[in-house]
Image 1 (tube, rainbow, N blue to C red):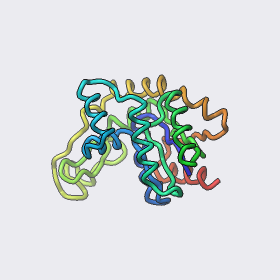
Image 2: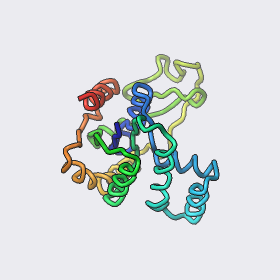
Image 3: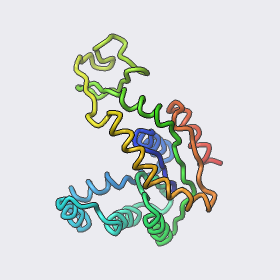
Image 4: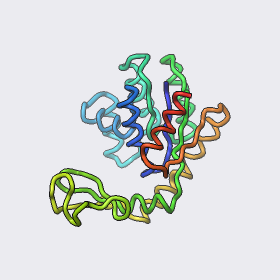
Length: 215
């Protein structure tokens, strides 16, 4: 099973991908993670990517394709793959088709986590975590049982991500709509796109995704 998980930042892709990894033994291929790992390991592709990034340029589709090719080559043929953050453009979608075919694979599902922009802004801008143990909280949906004290470790220090602000979130949403959503018609023509309510609670989203995969 090879799937693409789509959705704007904050839609919950990372959480859902991890649950699929745990439940089905799938592999999550995140281009950002792969790039960092290749650079750290100083692989030939990693060194090439590092040089590009140090010049402040975007890593080319060819480099990303080489990373994915290496990952697919290294895993068992029957291991399912979740593509997270890739493809982002029509050219990358075409490249991915070729890569999968070269490994005897093909895409079964493209699942988009459908979100309401205003609700997503509230979800993201209200997030904060314990500075000591990392437990997550929210201004509206999940406050500590005792105000100012972490439920898990008792710490009284909390932190927020600097980019969890309304302006940044709306910019990310606009970028997602402009760059990533245009690839959807490519997969809609094949009849493999399913939209899942990304604003539902996490367990409901997981159940909806599993229904698609088991359908």
